[in-house]
Length: 416
Image (cartoon, rainbow, N blue to C red):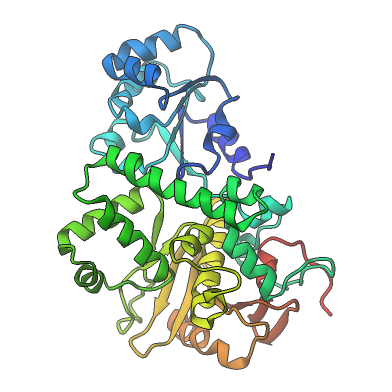
């Protein structure tokens, strides 16, 4: 059992908020996290689903009558009619901690939901396991980067931090079941079954799609293009899917949290910056399986390995942001002159740029994009980081650092 870093956030929210909503892709561990928090009901259960669907108000009234708070409703997106009924109950009694809801879809995007519980509900997102959670570490590099001073410490000598280890971690990803499996073949079987379930059940439950095979092809193509600014029109032509249909499919993949769109950073001085979002699969292990990347095959291709490791690092950063105290906004940046920074963290009073390299060494050339971004954000304080597959931290100038990727999960030791 892993200690989920989001657990303390849920408890904090229950102390002052009537409804706490925990969202996350299916099989990220939501049920394990919340089922013992109160009176539990799972709407994946056919009988419970039928009862809630036929009479949402009566269903909730029978649970409230038991006087066991919080009431935990798992996979609540199956019955959107529950939300206005919950609103009525909460408006009659605004006591904190009355409901814990979970959903495998971005329920606030469903019609009417955001309005019904506005001001009454806090939404938290559970990602697949972070490497910090797997390692049992409380380190949060995101908070450290946002501080007034930053002096990175490399992982200890016992940590395996080279390219091979990072690539293996990226191939496994963070879903609890694949992490627990020691065979790559068995992990692959899990991913295959997972994708089938998502396409044939969860996505269809949200909106009937015309062609499951087209959606499967789209997901596989996005896996091969993960961590890039995808040209939707080009994908539409390649798949032979109408542009409007493809946009709808992309929206469903984002709604079920299989794909994340990282928006482009811009400012008044960045008028020559690209505006397209970067699309990232939310788990590098799933991306590797869909793109058929294996440890002994195509992962040795530097472009393929670079995209996979970039996806791995980006999703690790997103996981840390979700449990951080500083809660920066996450962007990417690319100029029309092809200068780019893989991740931009906007803390409000500070900008941090992170360039991701899969190589085992960092060079001054790797700082080019970061230095261009620094010019754009001036006079705001700026910090630039090259995250690479090595084991030493090194300074490249004032607030410019090369930092091991493993610093995302390993507690630091002394600088050598």
